[in-house]
Length: 314
Image (tube, rainbow, N blue to C red; front, side):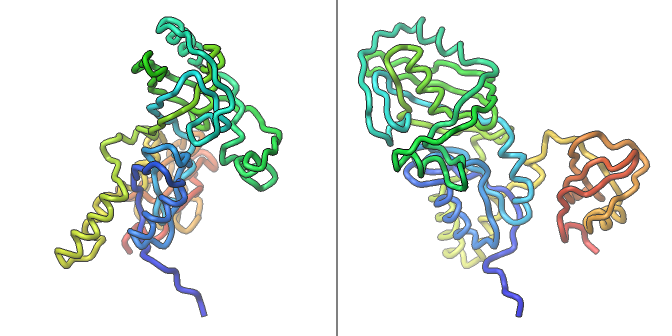
């Protein structure tokens, strides 16, 4: 007998404002439980210390998580000068204390040095894996393992506040995928000669998604209570907070095909559309409905890459 999936078959993207003090996976599981969703995944972990935008993909939207993982991010970060920690943030132990003798001009000069492309070694306290285990597990055991540097791009890094009395700095960073803000702060502290670590980190944007679309776990719980009080299904209020799946693909070129072609495409068939298909991945619309992503097979032929089931009405 086939095993029935637990939960609702629901598709869409929730912009969760992750609270401080819990892991991204814990936040994901709480949101999944509130929505009673069959399937869910997040698109890029935030440290327990960090807050802010954690896009959660429900159902068929999980097929497109990579596009959000690969997009650029924006953070607001506050750093403490004069102290270096084991984790480069305030969750770690202070391993070095140095006097702070930094002027605003020096600070702005060193911040500007991070702009553009560079190589960055990920922190040992990251979720990247080595031989199947996250790096942070090795770090907690005091084990240092090899790490590959990665190309990053700091599009902008601005100084928002310099609190000289408390040796604290606040910045806004717009960076490429895979950039570790903790590492930037640690490197900045070394450039300044005093050390530094993150004391607050908030992700304000993922790609084009605006911060005002974020919702908290508390707000989701309030929607549940409102539905109960109004004697309606929770989905009445919760599902209105979800964004369409194709909002993850706004940077892709769009190919329009007919409903008949869309039915074949949705079943994994290559369709002849009689017009050029751009190189790379494209967003495919059939009869005005998003049905997945495709790529060029031959001139005038479109091959399914990530198709969606049951999107087109019979």
